[in-house]
Image 1 (spheres, rainbow, N blue to C red):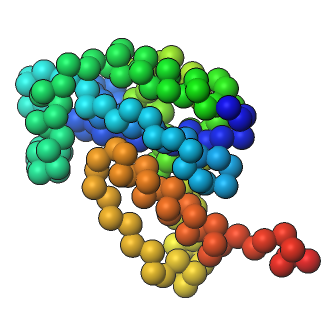
Image 2 (cartoon, rainbow, N blue to C red; image 1 turned 60 degrees about the vertical axis):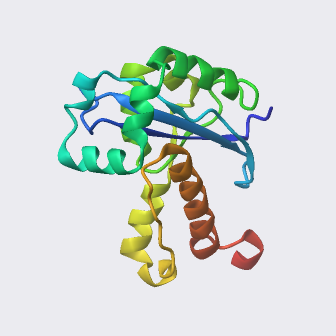
Length: 184
């Protein structure tokens, strides 16, 4: 267990409204500070009722239907509380509470859902975020020539999306950050 380890998280939801939509999948990965994957946490489909699933818009119905996530959600016996408890049990093995920023892509959206649906898990993170999408937006505006060649293929399945985010941050580290010895 190291306070420098990073917790990566991704949620899939029934929609983007953090006040009314529900979490349908959660996954976590822990890396060291150099982005080496140390462990993958439980990837859990979270059961939601057919009535809840029916509230999804066309994009979510299509995306989560084609990926098989809707079928996994219907078949799951895991509710939000159990998913939260199992995720916390995993994280306790690798990172002390309050040490890791929440890491991922567009992570503020995930944090809003966690604050409402899984408050103990949200409180496990440091208040800071390590949001890969911030680097993406800055690079697109300031150094577009340096990020050519990176193509992210989002599956909208939580565990693969985390792996993609870690790989994306590695790419930006190589292309955007100058090592101290080179900076002089």
